[in-house]
Length: 224
Image (cartoon, rainbow, N blue to C red; front, side, top):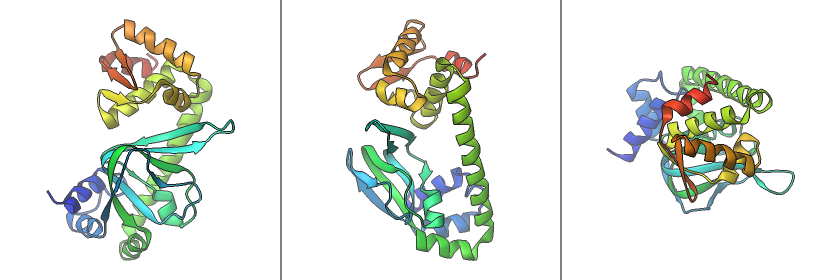
C-alpha cells in the first residue's frame, strides 16, 4: 500500500472525513507529504504558526504544555492512525501546546493552504469539521468533570483504557506522566497501580504498563 493510500485509510477512520467518498479521500491524501522525527524531537512549539494537519503513520507524539511549577503537563498522546492539529490548521492562529515525538515517528503532513483550498471546493467537509470540534468540546468537558467528581481509580482506569485503545495492551508511559494526566501525585498513582498489580489487572515494568485484564479495568472505568 502506498503512503497516500495509508493516509486515506487514516482519514477514513477519523470523524472529520468518515463520510467522504473514496475519490475525495484520495484527492486529500494526494496533497500530503511525510516527515520523520527522532525521540524527543519537537514537531512544533506553543506559539508556532498553525500551518498543517498531522496524521501519525508510526510512532507516538505527545501533546504537552508547561505547568505553573515548571513541570511538563501531558495533554494527550497521539499514536498510529491519529490526526491532530485541526484547530490551528483551520483558524491559522498559533499553536496552543507543544508536540514532541515520544519515540521515532513518521507523520503525514497536510499543509493549511492546500487543505483550505480543498474545503472551498468541498463544503460538506467543512460541516464535518464543525461536528468534530463540537466533539472535542464535549471531550474537554468530560475531562473537567472527571477531575472534579470522579475518584482516582476511575480517572486512572479511564485513562489507561483510552491509551489501550491507541497503543494496545503495552502502554509506554511513566507513572509521573500518568499522574499529570489524571491530576494526581505520582505516589497516589503508584499505590493504585500496585493494588491492580496484586489483582492481576496489570503488570508494571520500567516506563511501561502491561494491561492484563481489560474486563476488570473497564469495569472500574465505568465505575460499576
